Image (cartoon, rainbow, N blue to C red; front, side, top):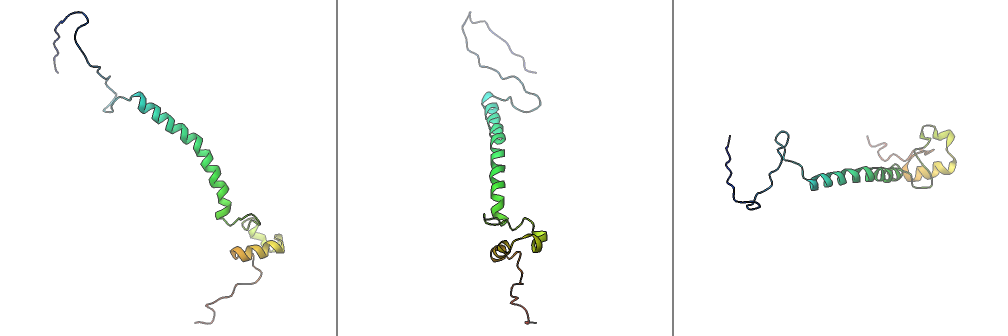
Length: 111
């Protein structure tokens, strides 16, 4: 343990530096700038998270095959009975789903 000695130099004379409060464990003390930046980052994630989820949910229709005219995912398990002829033709042309005729097999007879 280090021993400190003091010498009186007069009232109001002398300089000293602020000494940080020891922290728990080996972590350095947290300053206010770090705390504010962490808080702002956390709040921006809370606010931007739902916006990002909404944008991805809106875009999900596009990458699943929905382009506005017909949703070729909806009712696909019973497409023969539930889809209109117009929807069958459109989904067959765009995504090869709901086709009443099988597409031509280029590999047939090559064995």
